[in-house]
Image (tube, rainbow, N blue to C red):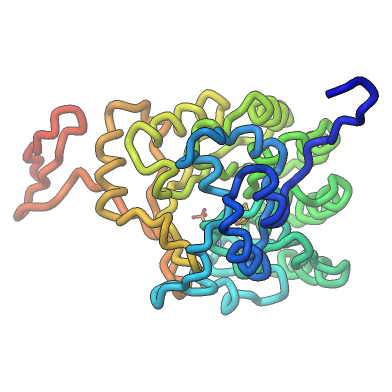
Length: 353
Ligand SMILES: *Cc1c(COP(=O)(O)O)cnc(C)c1O
Ligand code: SF4
């Protein structure tokens, strides 16, 4: 680049034309992707773009974020609200399904838009920021619902809020005596680590409640130098770090890929919490890994990988019945005995009672 030419600052790619121009989608797909962008939001941050290996047509980072014309096809088994948030919404922005905890969704914007997102019908860049009165009503709901001990900030992505607005929410929640835990679910540390500023860390450090932050990441490479710096900053602010992942075809559907992902999490002091079976949201079929295969992959990891890495493999049942563990199980009954398989030798031992 000649001297004096202004360098273009890397920016978030938000539509089909930008993806084609960046060489991330073939020009032949432009019309289909333009139809798609009317339905589902697109965003690839500079951090995510930097992780993509353009020489690899099956790149596991690109696969998570670059739209595909296949998304225009909805299978009969796919649902627009697969986890049934809507029927469990006592006030706008709150989802209360379990007795002791509830979600607070202050906004529906995310740093990136994952192609397999279970809330893809509602998330988007200009979607769902609660108005001041709506937010106050949601916070009041927490204040007058004493059986709820944990507030889970999700969305969208709560770290897309300004530190000031997030600080206000945390302060209000912190003043509610019956709340013990505040949890945040976020993609920001891996997808937009530059948002994890000292100001954000100070905002999080200000609460006296037990604070857990659950990072959504699906591939080891998402733990870039920038992501690790962001996570270190959060950890030093006193935030306990958990990891959640979705089992995804072509992204992490092998024992090697999952082992690398969990090791990358643990190296960043992130404890793998959940491995989610894909929720059947519209147009996501290309990501589905059958449950039997998921169980077999995890079975292969038990014993060979530090126990710290072991997540709960769960399915969020359609209809709102909750997240159910899917195994794998190492124990079964035979009469009054248990047959328990050794993770290291694969041999079942009889264990009476
Ligand atoms: C997933 C979810 C939670 C959190 O469940 P945990 O098992 O505690 O992680 C809480 N409320 C709703 C509505 C959920 O979907
Ligand atoms: S970050 Fe989460 S809520 Fe946002 S698009 Fe991805 S999966 Fe959906």
